[in-house]
Length: 409
Image 1 (cartoon, one colour):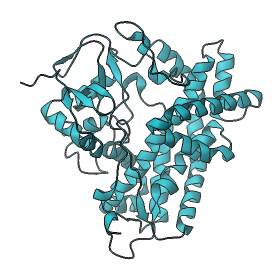
Image 2: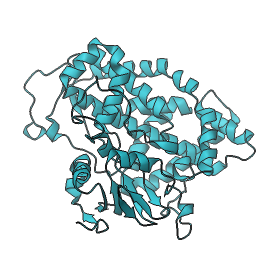
Image 3: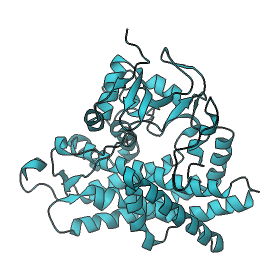
Image 4: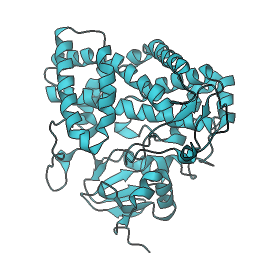
């Protein structure tokens, strides 16, 4: 029997080319194992659905470095500490912060965004239709600007700042730019909070400022700043990846795309299946063991980092029959793309709304939309957490000549 504590070495090219494939292999051979993850070091990787779902709700898997078993730790040095948000807290701090955020981030506020989201999507697609050239990058023209514009309107970011914010958030994933981006975003959001405190509007930052100022210091200034930072970072990349990867899935499964055009009422179920099938995240954000924890019959010692591979859980045939098949008739729900337990994604309703609007508008506007590259030639970002394309070349009005691999053009 293999020593579960002996880390598996992973070739960086293999891992980043197909993280879900690597996790799937682990799921069949060593479903709970120590792995040397490129760029991260030793991590215990959990890959089966039942184990991942249980781990997401296990209080012995912590996200708060103040609770490290051998004494409090701090996050790696940064120009500014923006980690004081609920994603990096355990109860009772997490319970307090999530409750305060929910006072501002209400279902009513999200529902009110639908008409404006439709308008934004239709404007972006009209611009894409009129763009010169036969091939456009759907990532640049639609998948990125839609969520950053919706997030900006939700938060009250001035229109003049939105292009800069989009670039900053994209640059955050580039290791060499991260410190600079953190400094710039901290300054920008601090100024935005100050402006909203002076002149509040009907936006989420103004609502959070009211929560901060009326909560008798239940929300600190750094928690407010960190919370705004988290909303932007968590609400951008995941939705970008869902729209881009979901579109790719539709283009490579034309029968399902045709069904969706003919039956728009399928959109909610289709989005759930696309969330499961495309996995905007490769794995959940990191947790560590507070004590020795048994997962899937394997004991993980205290003080070890754990990655719960949600993409592998969503592809587990023990939970989803024929998981490789994109099937809008599949019973919706059950996937763990938004997590599970107390850290279940606060922005899930907004991501679902944006995806439903995006796919519905895209399929209606461009009934002949086609992929302008072979799927094998598309490149995925070399990022462990995010499962995202670097580009998605498409022909909005359909192919005018046989599709060629990128390298042959």
